[in-house]
Image 1 (tube, helix red, strand yellow):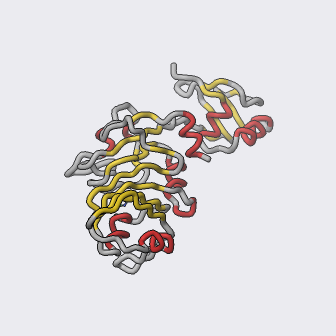
Image 2: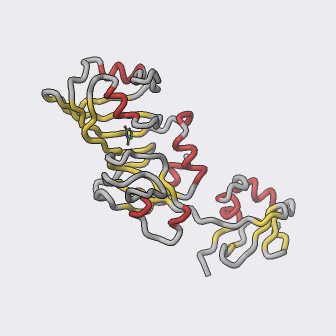
Image 3: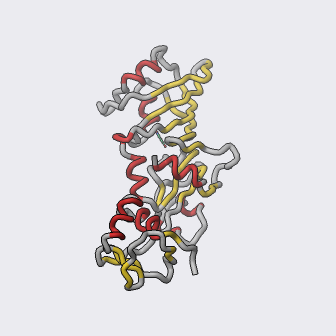
Length: 239
Ligand code: URA
């Protein structure tokens, strides 16, 4: 027998409405559990053995899983690949088939990658409309123009003519022909950070993602290591 879940949580997590909408639906007799109409929404459900119908339709429960991976270099952000190891090859567990990475990091990029089976959340985090900040640490070769931060703020015209949304650039350290910087972007165009520097005649030689919205990469996670998100982290991401 699996872990039991309250009926309202069960249906809310499966996208049937908010908990109060589900309570209301129960009151109206729209929910049946094991063939019996359930007028309240507090009943504890065992997803492995109970059958839940909403308006006559069976709703199966898929447990949501969330992992924070420190992606190492040399693995691809895909679920399958014929040539390279994928980020999912680094995750153990039985529900692995349903998991996918939220967005892509290049094969040579390290750092924070969220792995989940929650399609709704992934969609929200990736949509530029939702303005989720992604912060990268980069080492850049070449001479950055003095007004580089202002150019980032205005949006950079890439070599193919595409213009990026306004972005942040903070120079942490600059030496002769090289700089260490923090870049904040809200989009995820193909090779975006590398192409933003390319447009200024520079080259990114190292790239690591440090955060995505409220989620931060733990110093304690070495490249290739991962851990489940805490309940607080999941709630923060959903807000
Ligand atoms: N920008 C890039 O150029 N590469 C990444 O992996 C992520 C952002």
